[in-house]
Amino acid sequence: MRVEGRDRKIAGDLLAHYDVHARRLPWRVPPGSNGADPYRVWLSEVMLQQTTVAAVGPYYTKFTERWPTVEALADAADADLMAAWAGLGYYARARNLLACARAVAREHGGRFPDTEEGLRALPGVGAYTAAAVAAIAFGRRAVVVDANVERVVARLFAIATPLPAARAEIRAAAERITPDTRAGDFAQAMMDLGATVCTPRKPACGVCPLREDCAAFATADPAAFPVKAPNKAKPHRSGHGWWMERDGHVWLVRRPDRGMLGGMRALPSSDWSDAPDPAPPMAGDWRTVGEPVLHIFTHFSLALRVHHAHVEAAPAGEGEWWPVDRIGEAGLPTLFARAAEAVRKDRDARN
DNA sequence: TATACGTGGGT
DNA sequence: TACCCAAGTAT
Image (cartoon, rainbow, N blue to C red; front, side, top):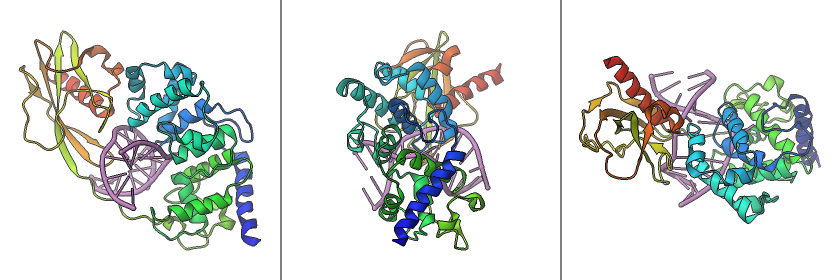
């Protein structure tokens, strides 16, 4: 059949291109080779969820040096794991990473399940990651659909249905072009193509190995696919954070597992709900940093007013005194790392 | 199906 | 500047 032949040609052309142009990435084995370590594939895939290759690089190196196996990771202390993840974002991933490593080590004898279904049952492993690990680490034929694949497929077939309604149509098309062999290479080739050639804006169609078979290339504006609704405006919020210092130590708390920055060390702070100026946690020589720390999250932006004081005792509630000269090792998420830096600068400016 | 959930880089 | 986007998952 003509259509079936076209689908096979797409995979063949893409794999031939990948054999020459595959990006060399720390977690990747050369095209066509076996032996990818499931632990490393899984770790990289979780880190790469909604996160750029450039941001993941140093974290992947740090994690694999410190925890070379899934058993080693399973034995990590929660606080160490969360601190090592600090700055990478989406902290539910770190909590699920640890839960997943412990499940693999203790319930699966240290070996990752080698099927999509088995992988999908693990914490933090969704449809995409299960398919990616099954294909890349175990050579299974699995249909791997991430945002890159969605874009490439929407263009190849000029799918005009807007996202997210187009997902079923896109998946069906991805299913048709996924080859029976080299599914792992095919998945990575599609993602490389999306990241380097078939980019969201200004795609490099001139060097694309699939342009002959691309329905969008035949239109006036290939970048018009996939069709998406405009994003909603982000609300602005404000809040307060408190730096309490005593004998060269600052008081840090751990945020609850649920919600923003869940499970992370943090400065005590208000609930960011625009409430009127709340009272500080305790008495002290309070001063306020001149400019609030501005931080943009996925679905709102925050202006955090940062206050600092020397105190005589610990405030009420759970927490720990952390050495100020080692604040960089506390594993603060970026918002609070910036708040700490703002306090340091404010004090320098006053002296 | 819609929303919550980080961060940094690109335009 | 303001907005878009990135190898998604859980609820």
